[in-house]
Length: 271
Ligand code: ATP
Ligand code: MG
Image (cartoon, rainbow, N blue to C red):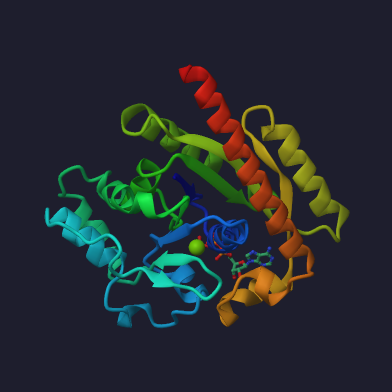
């Protein structure tokens, strides 16, 4: 099982959209996938069609509170099943209270990892959607993960913002989770209609490409993609032959082949 976090403290860069379409992309490639919504805004939960998360009987807040209280959990409890085959541990606004409880919790960075470890054997992939901050919930997401993917819009990629994220990732890797590796930056909402935007994507590759992996696939700006959260489905179901569906499919394949490469490398290393 591999756990991947979509992380970027900048808001509105496509984390949730990528969690959803990579998740269902992997399901379409015959993988068993759990999505975990760790954002109290619950955008992923809502985008998958659960429009009133506060009315759900069990959400991630309940699960994490149980773990913090030291009680045993049934890890399958509360998991929702989407009609495109992906599973979801939903979020709700109650999770913002949980973020506060985390501060005084024992092993406060590892609470989400406890949950992921408990559910691991049921899935091939767990994808974690993070909130736009580097607070306790985001640290929990990084601590629970093998891989972090950084969605970013090329024209808003700030060197300072990226620096802060990378130094946080490095700290988590050194102090808590040596397993963590950066999968790469995923360029999202790339507007290929203008030369300016195309040039920005190219510049990002030149400026950051030597320091950080950048996925070859670029997710194009597409109105159809911005509509999916209102219909509760993936881009594959909503606009199958569109260019965003094609891009998310290519990205899914890139993640799968990267996974094979990393596993091979680890196998060779341990031989
Ligand atoms: P937050 O930081 O608030 O959690 P986020 O990083 O999860 O945001 P999304 O919610 O995925 O970002 O996307 C931000 C907005 O951009 C949403 O309204 C979404 O529908 C839209 N969007 C995402 N991807 C695309 C795209 N490829 N083309 C056009 N619009 C997009
Ligand atoms: Mg989001």
